[in-house]
Amino acid sequence: MNLRFFDANVSIGRPMNKAMYEPLADVKALLAHMKKTGVGKALVWHVAQHDGSPCEGNSMLANAIRGQRSLYGCWALLPPNVDDVITPDFFRRMQKSRIVALRVFPDMHRYLLNRVVFGRFLDEVTARRIPLLLSMEFAVTWPAVYALLKDYPSLTCIIADLGAWSVDRYTYPLLETYPGVHIESSFLACTDGGVERMVEKFGAGRIVFGTAMPRRYTESAMLQLVHAEISDTDKALIASGNLERLVAGVELS
Amino acid sequence: MRETQSLRDAFFARGFVTDCPVYDMHGHMGPWPGSSLPRCAPEDMAYSMERAGVAIIVFCHHAALMSPDIGNRANIDAVRRFPNYFRAYCAVNGNYPDVIARDLKAYDRYPDVFVGFKFLADYHRVALTDARVRKVWEFANERKLLVLMHTWGGSAYNGPGQVAEIAAKYPQVTLLMGHSCHGEWDKAAELAKKFSNVYLELTAVLDDRGVLEMFVRKAGSEKILFGTDSPWFNHHHHIGAVLGAEMTDDDRRNIFHRNARRLLAPFLPRDWEKRKRCREACVSG
Image (tube, rainbow over all chains, first blue to last red; front, side, top):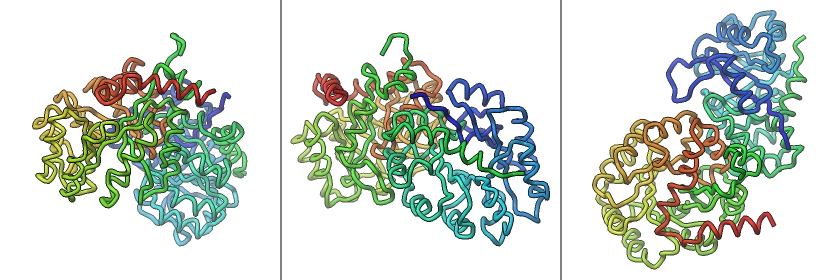
């Protein structure tokens, strides 16, 4: 079967420290890579949102993806009432800039991920069904994820970059307890039988395809999914259907 | 595979490529305390192998590495249950010289099981160069065996420095740097280039894009072996990474099977791959 891929986890921009991987320096490089690998759509963030300033990084991302129909963006959050990220017209600006999801980097940006810090703002994010991406590779800890979801149990979130070694003992209780929790597949696909067991226990609707390009190879998660021992319907949901559904459900107006 | 079809297209089309078997030189088996592994039983691993065209996994059972009271019996039992799928590395735990002495004494009773030894020095906290494991190195050197070492950057037990010392001292041993001194990638590539008996191994390397390309550039694809830590990592996931890396299909064939086939030749029956093709026919039939 020919799967349509919508990648939930792609970054552009050059990191502060030189890495082994060749970064996707700009949207042109990203689109060329997507064409080469057969990825149709992508949910993108900019490395400057993490390494530099979320304010400037968000703006850079919005400018970079402007006019690109195959790309959607993720903005990085900072706590309300401290910096200038969450402004009164925040959601309207998201809509104008094709931003359909949010990211947080609490350790790097020195804040806590809970109700004391985010108050009613994350209630509104919850009500608007805006997915919050929590990357375990970028200094979000498991206790922080558990604390966040205890405070905002209906939040739509995508836990990304799980780590190479299986973490099902962390993820399964969250999937069991919180219906808005989804798992990004770039590292889940790494565990032999990881995708299959999660589909069996929780259904394919809880997994979204992701590659972590350019830090990891796009073909890894792709080849695993293409030959996974799940139904073609489930493969299509994971490859793009689930993320399409989440994006369509976002209310920004 | 059609002559004009790339390995990438062929693996995406079928999941395995008959004329490009995959030799997995770094495997384990059985449960692990720190994670839940969905497919860690030998029969489940064998099934996964079929789906990705994996000709063999050379492994060391988790129990043999972590539980001295079980030891290498776990390896022997598994290989003898599935002789057309697996060969084993005899586990070495330097904390138990009595177990080592017993295993060395018994080693020759299992030519159908073992291809050499496996060290997990970081976990056992006994350096590769420690006097307690010297007899293992001498034994392996005399018999020209393969030794898979867990290697990690910055380690005082199995870092690049310890590998260099062992490589120079025991030139008849073929040293497989499991995880390729993870993090100290440049030093790993230098070791593979400098010592003819040292190979890079790709378990937990392939989730860092760019490292493999550097290895091919600096050490050459002839010095790189495919591995997955199976039952940890999915074969298609790691195969996909090799397919996505910038290199030729000729390089990929070196990594997937040519290098390992050469190293394993003294330890496997000549008709090993023919057996694999029979297995494939049974599965697809």
